[in-house]
Image (cartoon, rainbow over all chains, first blue to last red; front, side):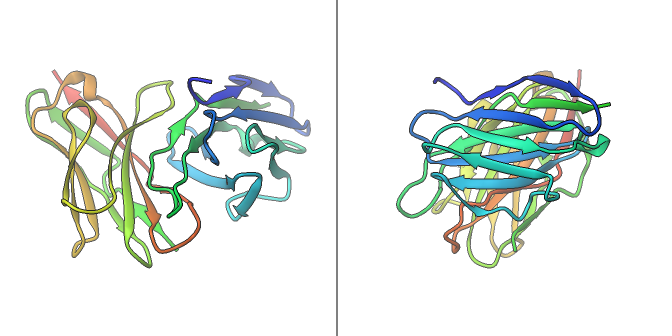
Length: 117
Length: 115
């Protein structure tokens, strides 16, 4: 596609429910990132994919959070048993990766706003 | 571990005046440095980056940034601010020496340009 696409754009859920957030990166971008932005806060790194592999999962807040990427393209971030503190905007970004590593900029989607009641 | 600091939560500047948004970083090796802007209710947009070479880099919308290795800083500047520049600005860093492409963002600085 022309840009990074995220769905849903807005999700309201009840505490304890599971949610799935989807990211469709720019075609050909091998690197994919998930960040979380809470109200008035900066970007918290969650996880990074290179192809289908996730070299760094250190940012996932708890074992309720997981992410996968299939076919080197679409990624899904899953939050199980949601809590109110999970309420935030979840941003996905993708990037090209050169042979010497990623020197390019990240292209961000519009984000998925999650509200846990 | 890499980290980014933006010491000012809020910067206010009069329209037409020069603006500076500060950023300092910490990496174990040499950095790749980036600035992004976020307009209200929008995703982040890339402004400019420093990879290597000239310490002064120019980017979109008339912005520029100066890499200072001794001070580990990468301050964002613009000679003449516009009201439309009001937004949230994020500095980001990647450690050039690692094989991971992890990009870490600073906490952001809210810029208000006053007419």
